[in-house]
Length: 125
Image (cartoon, rainbow, N blue to C red; front, side, top):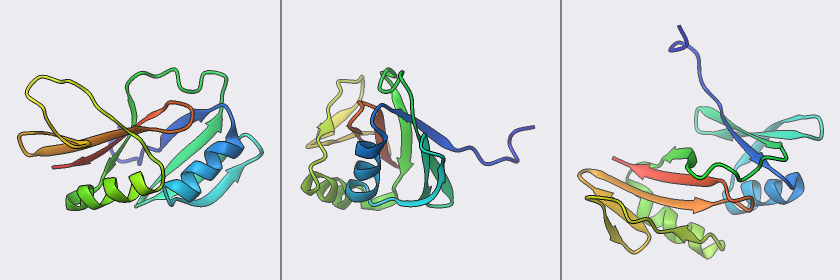
C-alpha cells in the first residue's frame, strides 16, 4: 500500500530562522521549497527533509532522521566537527566506539543534535 510512495523525513523546530541557518550552512542542505513562514523543505539525495515550526520541537529522545552516508562516514564526521557539530556518545550492548563513531557488526554510526535537540544519525553498512 504505502511501499510505492516516498516518505519524507520531518523535523520540528522552535526557531525556524536558526534552523534554516543550521540546515543550510552547517549541514549544507539546499532549500527547495517553503511552506509559508512555518516550514521549509530541503533536498536530501533523492528525498526531502521538511523542517517546520512546532511547540513540541526537540521532545523526541530517539533518532528522528537517519542519513545513509556510505563509506565516507569518517570524513563526514570530521567535516561536521569543523563546522561546530558536537557528536553524541551512547553506551549500547555489543557496540564499540571509535572516537565519535559507534560500530557493531558491519554497521557504523554517529549521532548529533540540531539546535532544538532533534537527533540525527549518520549510518553506513
